[in-house]
Length: 357
Image 1 (spheres, one colour):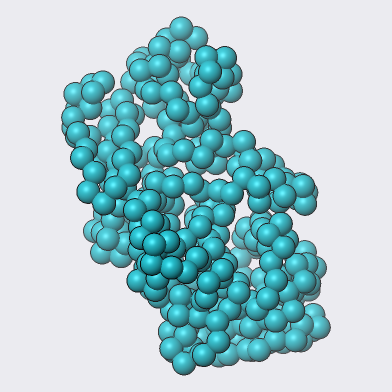
Image 2 (cartoon, helix red, strand yellow):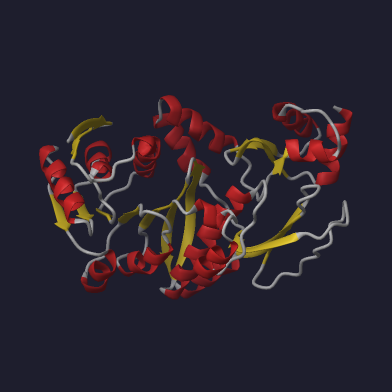
């Protein structure tokens, strides 16, 4: 038995119950998101484990109508005990999410899903307990699949061809969002992406559901496909159900690697990010600051990959970003790679700048 203090939560972790201390930062960002969104109403933590997330949402955000769910009896008992010791009144269910969603008649305003591995098997279930305006907070830890290390698994699970290259994390995150949008459309929901995170071994997306056939169709149409050159790092991304892609690289004539379907729309709501930044402290503030300043366009360029191809020495990303700004282009650092830059300048312009610098 172990005792932990995290945020406003004081919990006991029983033997055999999963708790990952490295995910504290993610839990803090989730708290900040709900506070910045001024979230209210009913909340369900579908994978409660120790109950730490639900406790923090109740005590730090002020969510009063809290439900916890976990199929594991040992974890369920641990979570219930922790909720009581923290003074949180909760409804608790020790059952499988699929069974729960199939019989539960009410819908929730906020749904948190943080499973082990892929979130894909549970998306239909959480949509059954959603309604117009519901907030979905979904974690996926099958990043190896989404980032192209297991091609067949990604095609099977997400009906999408992944990208296994420098921008793979962003492509993987966008594949996840695109998949959610397609499943949500089956329930006549469109999605509004409010925040997207990539760190360590996980992706985390924060979405709002909007009911209506047109909104559902518009969301699905926000997906598209891309092609990536592993030699020179040229990429092309096009929106559409069946977009036309030239798979011959215009810069080095090598064959480009196709990927998709994936979400081509925005990854953030900058207004929420700015409100989160104002509330944040320490590492969370630094993390959010990158997102606040990141250009919300797909995808990004890895400078070391380009300089190696051109046989050039290393160059500071900040220097290239500064030069691009001076030339009137949009440019920023990115959460997806320390040596990466996002910009609306094309590869030809970036190569020219790198040679001059």
